[in-house]
Image (cartoon, rainbow, N blue to C red):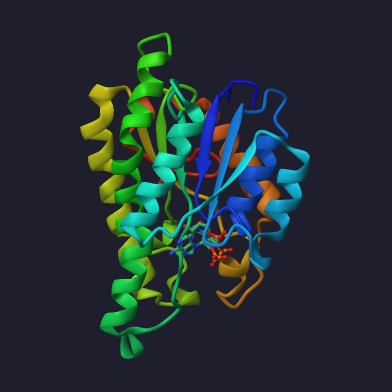
Length: 259
Ligand code: NDP
């Protein structure tokens, strides 16, 4: 993991599950970022207790309020991060926050389709728009011509469940809204990679594996991966991404997944 040397990183949905694991691992790197922005809905609340404990020990950890379905909250988060970074940009934006409804066709409603899409797909779009100036600034401020996550990148936490070709784990649940939202997130990632390449920003979609979190456990069977295994693998993958990987869909071990 020696390759990942980011000055600044922002993780959404950072108060529990994979997001919290990412923050913990980033803080524990041999060369930790100067700034780790951990975004969550209620920084002062009970659900952010673990982040608060971490922040009391790590001065480079800043907890930022963020509701990813609220454009005003996203703009405020970008402004607050920008103020702290002053003249430098944001190297790495990890769009991790997400929700899932394990519902079948019969019980799907307009409301839950819209809520899952707003969180898992529109949220990452609005975040990338709001943080684009800071990502561009990071790319401009980094030496070298190739793309990398140490320079400037957007990582979208996707899911193999959104693969149209493989429809991973159909037997464990139809999760229609979730699958549709992640398939759309994959397309968004591809579009971002094409649109942002000229700005020096790498964009990729990652599947974290099936992980022991509130979401992973809700699928009805014990997931095979711990948060530490998943996050350790993903950070290795993130550190190894280069020009050729922008616009790809990879799993936590770096394997290319079918769209
Ligand atoms: P969890 O349910 O454990 O955590 C979800 C996180 O997202 C929480 O921090 C939650 O905050 C946050 N969140 C949800 N909605 C919003 C919102 N509207 N605004 C801000 N934050 C929000 O999930 P995981 O850690 O398991 O999942 C993380 C990502 O990984 C997701 O995108 C998920 O789809 C993906 N993934 C997970 C897999 C797994 O097996 N676990 C498999 C494949 C993909 P709060 O506490 O406030 O609700």
